[in-house]
Amino acid sequence: MSEVHEDFDHNASEFRADPLPYYKQLREAGTGQSKNYNGLWYVPTYAEVTAMAHNTDGFSPAQGTMFPPMNDRPMLPMESDPPLHTEYRHMLMREFAPKAVAEWAPTIRETARSLLEDMFKEPPFDLGLDYAKLLPTAVICKMLGITFDPVFQQWVEDSVYRRISHPKEAREATDSVYSMFRELLPDRRANPGNDLVSLVLTSEIEGEVMDEERVLDFCFFLLVAGLDNTNFTIRALLHQMAIDQDLQKRLIENPDDIPAAVEESLRFFSPVIALGRHATQDVEFAGCPMRKGDAAVMLFGCANRDPQEFENPDEFDIDRFPNRHVAFGVGPHRCLGSNLARVEIAIAIEEVLKIFPGFKLAEGAETRYDDLGPLIVVAAE
Amino acid sequence: MKLKVDKKLCQGHNRCVVLAGDLFDADDDGYAFIVRQPETEEEIQLARRIVRACPERAVILSED
Ligand code: HEM
Ligand code: SF4
Image 1 (spheres, rainbow over the protein chains, first blue to last red):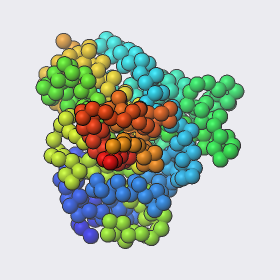
Image 2: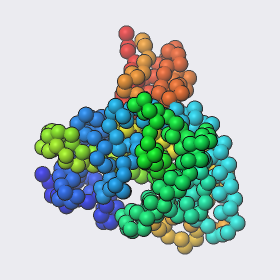
Image 3: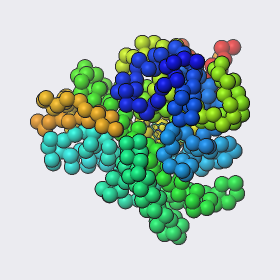
């Protein structure tokens, strides 16, 4: 047992401000137990994260994946076990497969353009606040078949982004989102469309349609699952291109390199820091005695800097090969929205580069971070 | 020489499809399948790269 694990807290601000020294120590010690969150285990290396994610018999997400939890309802399909999980995934997979996502691409591009046009009307603007943050919400609303309005954006933000800093407001916002879906279901049930809400409402799981509460759990998670992380990756890559003009020039001249830059951003910035499991039985994992019911979190960001898997892990290198990062997780629960996220991020970057090639951070603007990543203030020319 | 995707391991990461669209495609559910076997030396090299690129180690190139 190492000291570094004992006091470690993945939500602590000192860690968030400068994670690399913690990551190094945690990886060197391997999996270990902390005093925080009732003895949470931290799983830091690439090999250990991969092993835990693949062991769905031994480690279950069904009792919660977040510490502290987001709310007391399950996030579906993530917080479920096979065979149910397999059915859930089957229901949704087609909508998030590359073909389906490719059909959404023109809509994503239009949305990105119109957000940029609105943003340009009111300089100075911030690509983080006025663009990166809004795009993923606007897109998923269209997929769910719901109207995107400012109140709604606020609920989503409070519910997702402020759950640690303002738990009470976050909770109320979550309730508002649930109520909004609850009100919309009767009409959707009567007039199902081509959207995700209708799909969940009408699909049969274990031979029958799901009750309303379970449908709502799907609606809520499908709405919020991809917002902060997609936004974060867009911001982080935009910021990287603002401070590294050579990278930006290369991506302007070779747009075909954008997907590789997106992939490396996912690895390097790993927007999802930690997600957890509970041990389903007493087990020895990575040499550690875990008891049935013990909670453990996989540190995806830490694994993505593991020198055992990645050469020069702390270098941002879009030519890296192979780049088997675990930013989307790995194994059967691996992100269902990864194809969508990749396309959104790539389009978001392409559209900024078209409208604003050679963009820089505004004169005198220092990079600031809010809960959602770097704020990128860009001055109008 | 035979290029295969192990359907039990594939989780639809789609690295293969992005990096070698001539050899791999994704089905309607997002799982990868082989479009055609690599032919030229260049394609065989590419196939070897994809074996390394798949995060689930689901792409298999048997050398016999
Ligand atoms: C850069 C953006 C994103 C990142 C980094 C990300 C990351 C992740 C991670 C790490 C998991 C693994 C959960 C686990 O192992 O417990 C996950 C699961 C999931 N993500 Fe994403 N995600 C992103 C975008 C999205 C988007 C846009 C959606 C769209 C709705 C989405 C929907 C889901 C769903 C439904 C799951 C649960 C999958 C399952 O348990 O079978 N994600 N995501
Ligand atoms: S890269 Fe691997 S896991 Fe991903 S689709 Fe191809 S074979 Fe499947």
